[in-house]
Every structure is written in C-alpha cells, then in structure tokens.
Length: 96
Image (cartoon, rainbow, N blue to C red; front, top):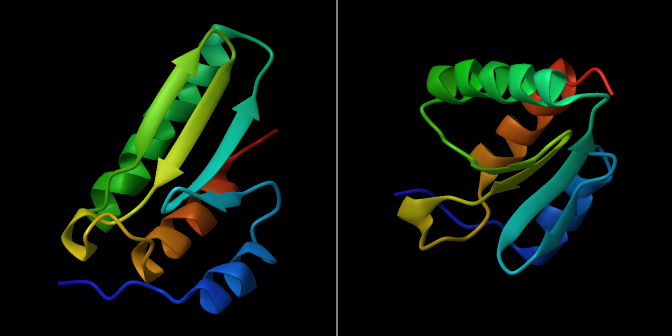
C-alpha cells in the first residue's frame, strides 16, 4: 500500500509542477493544444508513461483540451509520491 503525502509535501511538490493544482484529493492540470489530433497524441503518450510506471491517471478530453487528474487508489484515493512522479513525467513530455 502506498503512503499518502501530507499537505505540506504536496504543496512543496506543486512548486516544481507549473500549472498543477491540488483539490479533492487529486493533483490536476488542464493542457490546451491546437487541435484534437494533438490532444489525442498527448493522451497516447501519457498512456505509455502510465504503463511504464504502472500508475494510471484519470483523463478527460474535450476537443483540444486534456485534463489529467492523479491520485493513488491503493492509498485510499489520496495523493502519493507516485502521483508527483507521474505528474513530473507528464510535464516532461508535454509540448504546450
């Protein structure tokens, strides 16, 4: 089982994750692309990172916007280091 992070640790992590926010026990960010095709390509790329980490985000797509939300199921739906790490990887691959 994963260990939930304290609010101080989450807030510290957010300082290295531009545009990400913490609410309702989730890390969340919306990315806006130039087209649906770009948004879909981003979702596919996230899928590869998620599979490699064996940690899967909640994804929501409307046309050219992709909202990513992260929390850890085996930590009772709380934010853990797994979420912070995957958010960092998503930031690394985002081109917007």
